[in-house]
Length: 228
Image (cartoon, rainbow, N blue to C red; front, side, top):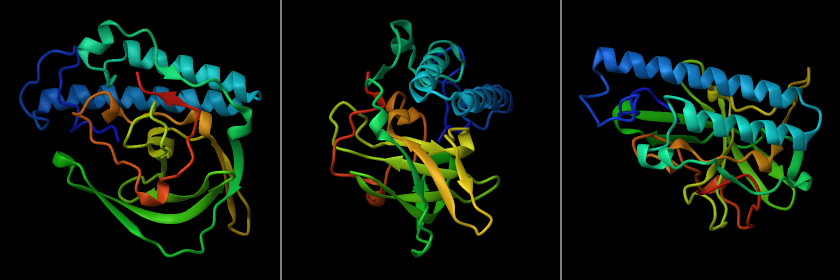
């Protein structure tokens, strides 16, 4: 979860200064994170508007690479940014793209995530999706102002971040699309090739909710963003 209160380094990747509540500092960081989220939302809008999934994936990869390389809110540490030549991704696999129904019949479980200076961030399970060949994943809703759908996944692939990756995080603009029928049933487009590492995979100063047990699968996902 990208949070202005958790990005503690200066925008120029200088030393840590003051505290997140310093008004001038936190304002600059907040505006940088605002722009990051705006760009991510625009990137996913372009992805959804692109008919060919492989082409959409290439657009997404290049867009993320640009953000990581140049944006002041990039989670890359200074030492990593200096030598950054792009994120690592598995080749696009069209068999890992699914449109799935959201099963909302289960109980509404709550998940509380401690985030240091941001306190407790609470999610409510609003359903499950079944990913063919991988099993069920819990679908979470971020409680609080604005809200958003959150779908992480953790798998045993040794080339991915150990805390899991994100498939959807609509509060931050990461939304591949879906459909809501008039009767209330919903589908989500889930493409495992778009799994990406949370910011804390690159900088521990970020606060990131990790994949809980209901979002852990036994089968390796050979797709999406890999570790550097």
